[in-house]
Length: 426
Ligand SMILES: Cc1ncc(COP(=O)(O)O)c(C=O)c1O
Image 1 (cartoon, helix red, strand yellow):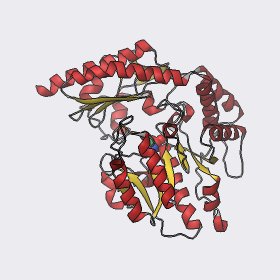
Image 2 (cartoon, rainbow, N blue to C red):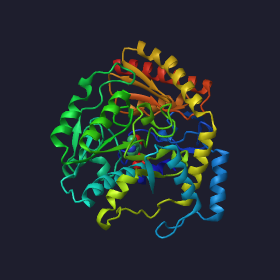
Image 3 (cartoon, helix red, strand yellow):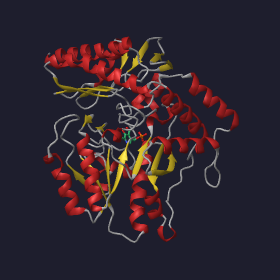
């Protein structure tokens, strides 16, 4: 199987013949992935932020089976169904009261495309054809489709290859004030200046609230987000919050924007929406934005084949029910306390620049680029699944990870970085 995979199957951001050995996963249960050779490893990544309840969850399995016996899919044009209606109700209930309309799509990137379309159409439908740009931030990441790529950091956003054909947007300095750090107005100056000079062209500002994820795993001050909202209001520019990674409890709040008490005009969610069972995302917006889009007889121009897929909606409903009825906040805060406690010792290693933690997210930043092949292999040997990138070794474990399992992961992180330090010195 691995031979076939190597020859024919492409993997994310990887050469067609990978430079490292792929692991073959046979099954998964709780927080463990079982490899073909029988070895069980703890997933420290929640399969890229999504598997918040762990794997093979009876409640989610049951919801999927029940929905399968009714219908796994039906088109959403002209038809609707109970699972989508229930899910929309819940999303409207648990997000900001300003958000009243839900657009279901298949992935986080597409939810961002929809958000960008909403912002553009909001203005163009009302006759403003000048607002054709989005203001985004350096170190931001919003997905891999073309619209989403155009608002990712041009360097850390992994899309340098497409620069020549991407829509030219405006970028402001990344938030340089860390989460909990004392605020200074200087941190928002660049953004303010860019807005002042370009607001007539800017349809919306897009940002990942509180945590910039794939562009650098940076946790920033809630004050920054508050100021962003304030400046958007000052110039009448829409604010898109991309909670695809942070949504559903990851940062210790159900949605990261709650840290700053701000209201988005448009909100993107995905990843953990279905507890990582299947690909689904949603874009929510307000009555005001929807009315703007529909001015002069226009409608929002998007409609994927698998929009509001019933199977995904049913699993999402079960996942949200499970999350909201669980002590998720306590679990996330316990993980946060333990990560703070156990990752700090990495700072004693010469190669470590700093560690940072927020909610169930732990980051060890190195002052050297990681060696993915070397480190992944060692992690697996130590019974852990962690996938470092850039100069970052980071984890966002499932919320159900036990104290002992988490200690296993943090110990492995320390040991792997320590061995990496020795390896690069040779
Ligand atoms: C903040 C953010 N937005 C959007 C995306 C894209 O989501 P997807 O990979 O489901 O298309 C990601 C993926 O990592 C993300 O972290």
